Length: 184
Image 1 (tube, rainbow, N blue to C red):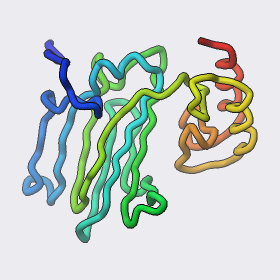
Image 2 (image 1 turned 60 degrees about the vertical axis):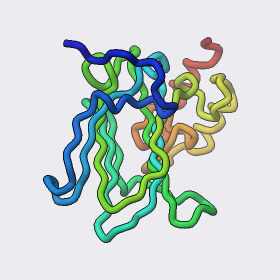
Image 3 (image 1 turned 180 degrees about the vertical axis):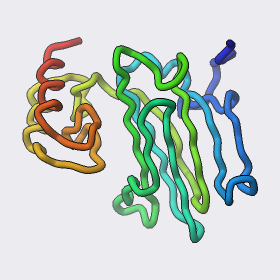
Image 4 (image 1 turned 90 degrees about the horizontal axis):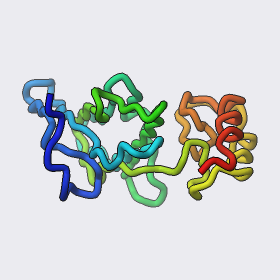
């Protein structure tokens, strides 16, 4: 099976829409559904962050993003962007175990929208697993983030101390950071 060809000259969002399937809104109660894959250049990182910035422009908004056999987020997970009117951001962090993609050799996703205006939809590599403050190193400062947020639960980002993205900051996150200290 040929998964992809001619990956050069893709936009900066690291998505290849040429391999996508698209379903028109009138076929799905007004929901547009697209599927695609992340650019293989993003496959080298153990962590990848996706961001969708949007604002509601209709009565029944939908923004969903899910990966094959992997994580997913919905409009309920979105947060207002401070100081930016009614714009919201929906973030997803992919943490690959043993470098495995969420799909058949590539990170495959489905993206659904209705009654929203999207201004940003992109993916970018993040630092190593355990690097919670984004400085490129796993160190004591990252452990301090975990200990400072111990017990927090809900929709959490790595920056909140949730290193394994399971929705709770606990000793498992501390172990990930401790094991990552000093690793290249």
